[in-house]
Amino acid sequence: LVMEKELQEAKAATGNSQQKLVEQSAVLLSCRSQLQEVEAENSRLQLRLKELSEDYRCRLVQYLRDLAAYVDSKAPGPIRAPADGAAMKSIVDSMLQDIRASYRAREEQLARAARGYQKRMKTLVKKHENLLIAYGLQREQIRASGSSTMDCGPAELHFSITDPELLTNTARELQRLREQKAKLELQLQEVQQPLAVTCWAGPEGLGTTRICLSSPRLLTEKGWAELRKQLQEFTHHTQEGLEQERSQLLARALVAEERVSELQEYIDQHLAR
Image (cartoon, rainbow, N blue to C red):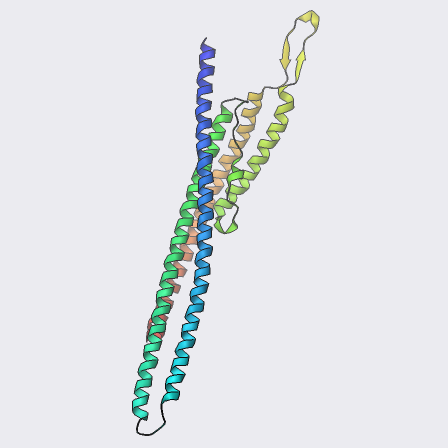
């Protein structure tokens, strides 16, 4: 009776874990869909940028044509030359100010769009990674329960991001470990299937005892012990990698700030005239 009760509790816990696993899978698919939408939005913005660049070029050509028409329309003469020169300078200054203002506004708009896009992408990638980790933990809990009939779902590698532009060094290392984990799980299943059904019957004179050569639960625990060992090693190496990446990012940030200061100084001195 006690064993039956424990079995029911284990089945209930496994069912809850599987339900959470399904929910995590649905959220992962939703994140992947959002990622595709963001990529489509980025493509649309790139196309819009191309169209606006063409428009600005056309406007610049039109400015030059207007300038040529203005100069050609003025009759030469020593009396009108000073006035024409002042008017010409005023038109050119106005034209250049308009061009600078247009390009400055466009640069600010593109910078805001790029920052917003990068921020959304980082948020989505981080959320996707957290969900993937939770999904992996749910699969491990189901496997640790010892139930061979429950479907643990596809491996984490199936939901991983493959776009190299979105992968950091840590994400690439996680990707490599997930590939190794998927291979180990496949090997474990291949070894577990034949051993789980191989049994031996004792001699007739000594009774009818049947002894299994391998226990699926013990085999699973052994395999997961090896995986846990690899994950512990990965955690240690990942911490070192994160510290390295953090130092590199800080150094790059300092260099970028210096470069921005130099560019801003150049703009203030030369382009803002």
